[in-house]
Length: 342
Image 1 (cartoon, one colour):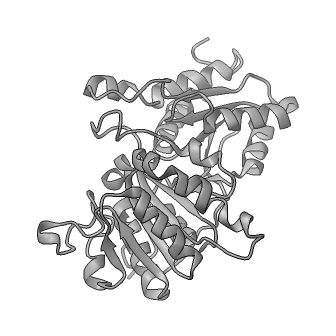
Image 2: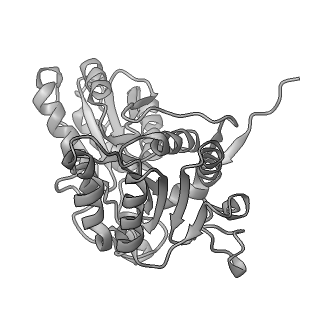
């Protein structure tokens, strides 16, 4: 009899990746903010939402909390990585990166270059991002564009549990510093079939999550689900959208996007962050520069507004892109023969 497939949440997939990497490699250590947590700091909670739940009990010498001093523990992680460990440091919210930006920008990202490749910095910096949990303007930002701009850093933003596990494992095994973005709303809201064995998903490889021939939709993180919802709505109108999940934002897999645009001749990019100097505009600009002749319509971007994330639930819900906005953007690229709106 066929065994039922194992379904994990996004949180559980991250937890399993951390446990398997620590079990397989003595050099992997986990520390930062709220990695133990829980009532009485017994390791039962692990992080504000639980991706490190129980890991302190399994690996008491490898999982620990740091004081709430981001500059200190990120700096310590850079030093640990340069001297033989593979630290996974947890910033909790990516908004806190401002406190330790010099350690990330000028130390972690530059060290290998500054010493002519004679040192490596196998550091993973985990952090939550994004809107949806009523955390206000200082705990809800989507700042991956800042880090994708910095040479020397790799930037990862998985959209589902199976990718979260494989990409986190690959990030831990990578010899360069990786900033690993975990959307808060995916922690409990995303579930999927996840292999039990240890595996990796290569960094820098996008995934076509839905095939189509009429318009390409590239979406980041939680926005992949919104893009898939939009694709279903478009399909009901006779429009087949191809949806691409970049998974890694730096290095970026432009070849997969280019191949799709050459097939569909239209592109919509969906990015929860603000529009100025964003990953969305970078993708749009590269396609316009390198595949202009393949386009039959202007590239459209669907992003959050250029504004702080509001605390008001009504305003916050209206802040990020959604399926309806993506559908409208896709329709605007279509000829009259395909566009229901026309």
